Length: 365
Picture 1 (tube, rainbow, N blue to C red):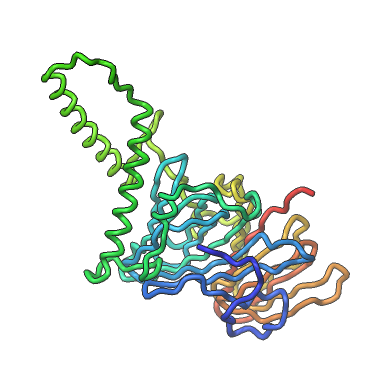
Picture 2: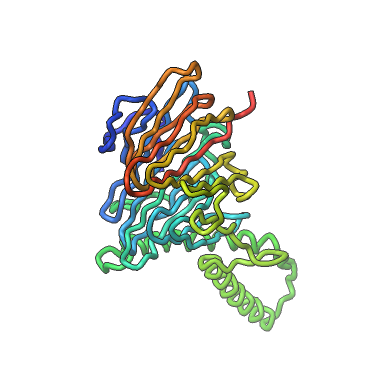
């Protein structure tokens, strides 16, 4: 997956009366487009010449589709907006899978190959991704082998492919074949290092030759069993089975603050340890009709917000107290607020206003 660091794009988000404001990110770039789904990315604003550390991606997948393995040199924070997805990636040098549902938050570390499978029953999958390069060493690529690169090569039909139609199963079989060959090669290399085989005996008789053949057959069968166990997520390590970190559900946990006018949830590395890799905090705010989130500012980092539901007003003020923006926003709009800039959210309509904010940690200067 390639992400352009420049601000720009091809598509504008409608519904807002503030298309010209720099605090509304309304230009999307279609990174992936295929019959099975699409990926759109909006780049954060470059403030005072700094390289923006945050991109926001929107992934949509049709039912029963596979997002073939991708690679990105940035930490990826997933939020499931609708549907269910099975996510596979590398955790502690092993392949793991996790099933995520609506409201779940999960983290894929930078440099990990990953894939998505829409496992929802006839339901379209929608995910919001926070693509944060602030915690990685710049934009340089990680070292990968040619085998890994060929395994990650996109299919001609596009990276999001259907898994049910017989006419569209060929890309899937080619992909799984490449994955199996790569994993078998890696597994055999690991087992060869652990297994000591004595090849110095020159006096082997016919029985010994038969034993060697039986050993080779059993070794191959054992490697295939371990390979299959790895693919289905049943890989074992010294000390127990490898488990992926459990997701954090924003809808199923107690809010950090709640009253008659709304609620908010704040999570960082203390509540959800995988966020430590990204240096990012997440805020989920829900306002009832006619309520307001009081003016506040963030002295630590820039905030990016996504309106998930409802309509409302966002007001941003310059540090000197003059008004910077007053804009009407609705579901799908993205805004950002620089640090030290006070801002407030006001909801005046019938439906609740829900927004998801991410705050990338600023590096120490």
